[in-house]
Length: 82
Image (cartoon, rainbow, N blue to C red; front, side, top):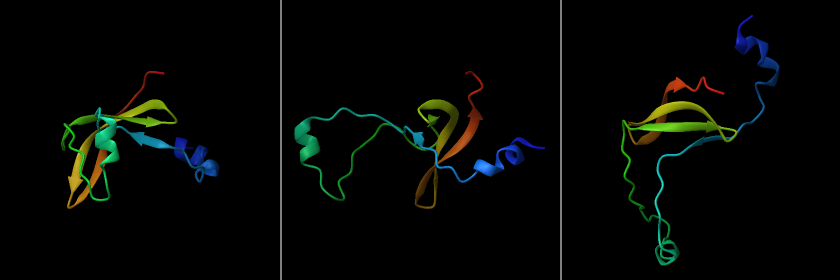
């Protein structure tokens, strides 16, 4: 029996997945001036490596991808250290 088959009975349980693309410090005045459609410039771009967290634990590594007009994350490796 594969690992996927072993846990199939809990397959519909929701788990938070967090992908941190970038961080930026902003002044409160900058944040207060944001409105719908505002753009916050970041330093990361497509192809860069990122960390993927599941339940606040580092679970995998990936890279930023853009397919047509959609930004996503391609998983490149899993964290095997616990």
